[in-house]
Amino acid sequence: MKKVYTRPKALTDKPFHYCPGCTHGIIHRLVAEVIDELNIADNTVGVCPVGCAVFAYNYFNVDMFQASHGRAPAVATGIKRSLPDRVVFTYQGDGDLASIGTAEIIHAAARGEKLTTIFVNNAVYGMTGGQMAPTTLLGQITTTTPKGRDKEQAGFPVKMAEMLTTLEGAVYVARVSVHDPIHVNKAKRVIKEAFEVQLRGEGFALVEVLSTCPTNWGLSPKEALKWLQENMIPYYPLGIYKSPAEVK
Amino acid sequence: MKKVLMKGNEAIGEGAIRAGCRHFFGYPITPQSELPHYLAKRMPEVGGVFLQAESEVSAINMVYGAAGAGVRVLTSSSSPGLSLMQEGISYLVGAELPCVIVNVMRGGPGLGNIAPAQSDYFQSTKGGGHGDYKLITLAPASVQEIIDLMAKAFDLSDHYRTPVMILGDGILGQMMEPVELDKVQEVKQAEKSWAASGMRGRSTPNIINSLYIVPEDCEELNKRLFAKYHEISQKEKMWEEYRLEDAEVVLAAFGTSARICKSAADKARAKGIKAGVIRPITLWPFPSEVFQRAAKSARCFLTVEMSMGQMVEDVRLAVNGAKPVHFYGRSGGMVPMVNDILAQIEKLASGGEQ
Ligand SMILES: Cc1ncc(C[n+]2csc(CCOP(=O)(O)OP(=O)(O)O)c2C)c(N)n1
Ligand code: SF4
Image (tube, rainbow over all chains, first blue to last red; front, side):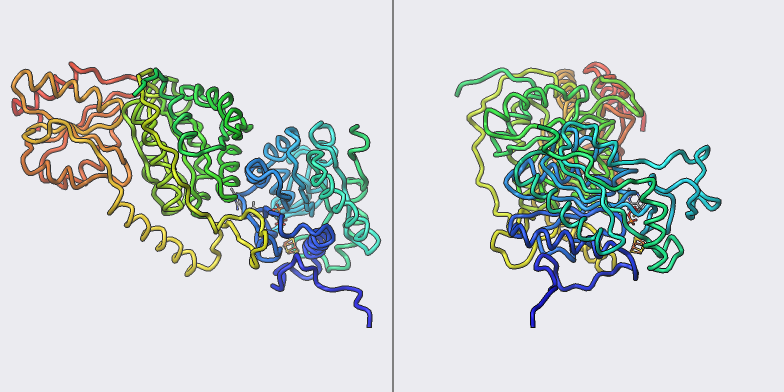
C-alpha cells in the first residue's frame, strides 16, 4: 500500500497539547514538512514564543530556543548573526509578535535579518485566557472586551503583514489561512518559499497564518473554521504582499 | 612591556576581544558609549559582529540568542538601560547561559543624570530581575584591572554557565590610564556541547529554555542554581586589602570610591590614625571572610559609596555585629572627596559617632 502521509521527521513523536480544533497543530506540521522537504533539519534552529506555542520546542525535532514574550526576533537575530550559515525561524502568536514584541519584529524586518517568521494570528490571546489581542476584530468578544472590541476604547486591529510590507528589509511577506485543505496546501507552499528566501540569503521573510482558537472564541472546532473564513479573511486579506521578485 | 593610554570604556572592549569575544549587541547610553564606538570599529577588524540593537530589551535578547548558540558575547549599558535588560538577564540565568554584561553606572533613580554613581549595586548583585538568582559581579578599580578582569569574566561565565556583570561607574569608564595589553592572554574556550546551534549530526535536539512548568522541576532548577552559587562563593571571591594589617578604622569601598578611600587612608595614617581599606572585587560573591578577620582588630568600619548606602548592607552582614559599621555616601552623581572621607575617619578615630 502506498503511504500518503507520515509524520514529518522534523516533528518529535510527542503528542501536541493544543485544544481540539486548534490549528496551531496544522501549522506546526506544515513547518516540519517544509523542513523535511528542504532537508535542513540538521542545520535549523527554531525560536518559540510565549503563548500557546510555548512548548513548540518539544515538538520540533531541531535545535530550539524558548524566548521571552515578544523577543523571539531579537533572539533569532543573535543566533543568526553568530551562526550565519544556519537556518533560523521564529514561531510567534499575535500577542507575542503584534503586542509586546512589536519593536522586535519591526526592527528585525527593517534590518533585513535573514530569518523566517511564522506569525500565527488567531485574533486573541490564547494561553492567558482569551483576552483581547492587537489583532482582535472590532466587535469581537473577548475576556477583556466583554461587550465586543470598541474602537473608541481599544483602538483598531493591527494588520501586521501590511505594515511590515512597507519595510525594505522585509523581502517576503504573505498572509495565508489554514481553514480548509485547499488553503492548507497553499499555506505550505508559501511557508516553503519563506524558508527558501532565507536559504537564498535574500532578507527577512514573514508568513502570517490565520488560525483558530475554538476554546477562547467559544465555538466548536467546525464553527471556528467558519468564523475565521467569514470574519477574519475580510479584514485580513490573504495573499503574497511582497516577494523578492518585486524587490529586485 | 609597552604601555598604551586607554579610556576605561575602550579597555572593556579591547579586553573582551582579547578574551576571545567576537559578538557585541548594545544600545547607546552615556557614560558607556565609547565602548560601542570602539567595538563598531574593532569587531569588524577581528572578524567579529557588532550590532546596534533597537533597544536594551532587544540587545540582551540578542545576547540570549548568541549565548545559546555557543559564542562568547558581550553587551553593555548604563543604569536606565540595565533596568531594561533585567528581563533578559533573568531568562539568561534561567536558561543557564554564559555572557558578560557591563554596567557603567550613572546617577538615578529615573533618568537621573550622566554623572558617575554606584547606585546599581542592589540591582546588579541581588538578582535585579524576577526569580531566585545571583549574578557574579566584578568591580574593577582601574583601567588595567578592567582589561585583566574581562578574560576572567568570560571564563567564569563559561565555566559556571551564568551571566557575569562588570560593574563600573562613569569615572572608570571615562578616565584614561596607561595599560599593558600584552599581559592579557587569549584564553582557551570551553566546549559547549549544550548549545543549540543546529543538530549537525547530533541525534537529539538541544533546547535552550527557562520554562519549568512543573513546580517540582522549577524548584529543582533553583536548587541546582543555588548549589552552583554555593560553589562560586567557595571558590571565586576576590578582594584587595590596603594597609589592613593593623588598621583600626577599616574603610570598605569598591571601584572608584575605593581609590579615593586609599588616598584618605594614606592621609589618615600621616596624621597617626591607623586606617586601611578593603576593596571587594567580587561584589557577589561578597568577600565576607576578610571583613570577619578585620573585625578582630578593627575598632570600626566605614563604608564609602557613591550611593545612599547599598553595599553597606553586605558589610553589616559580614561584620555581623562584631564592630560598628558606619556609612558615608554621596549620590546623584556626586563623588566623595578625600578630605570629606578623612573628616569621617578622624571623627571615628576620636571616638565620635557610634
Ligand atoms: C512579559 C510577559 N507578559 C505576559 C505574559 C503572559 N502571557 C503568556 S501567553 C500571553 C498571550 C499570548 O498570546 P498569543 O501570542 O496571541 O498566542 P496564543 O496563546 O494565542 O497562541 C501572555 C500575555 C508573559 N508570559 N510574559
Ligand atoms: S487556547 Fe486557543 S490557541 Fe491555545 S491551544 Fe487552545 S485553541 Fe489553540
